[in-house]
Image (cartoon, rainbow, N blue to C red; front, side, top):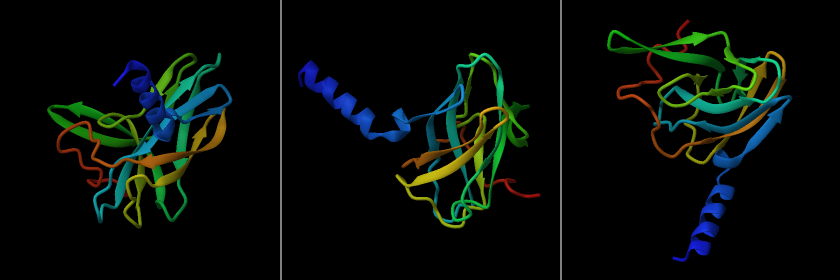
Length: 165
């Protein structure tokens, strides 16, 4: 394959994949890469991931997430911590996004949770999720459900102790 054909193919793949190139602006924030992790049938919870870059002069915070009820009963912000050889997760109230900085939520790290998913989400399905920022306000993005497991650490189970209050 010639270099121009290869370049054209690469550009086509990136433009056809909204999870790769979709970018949404909310005030001074740029949000991209919204995606939901692969779900096995019957799994009641799922993880979602995004990147938020703050191009403004003031810090902001991601303070919440919500989904339509047909997608999930509620959303939560989660952090992961490795202590004494054990990976643990817990809900947090917010994620800071410093001025000129970037918040990266990814598999095996800080992430968003969909709690109480009534019906298994299918690969390629588009899921609306509404992000709440302290300064930028609310913004709804479309996240694509991934087609294979994405967990960053072996044994990571998004069903264990999630959503139990």
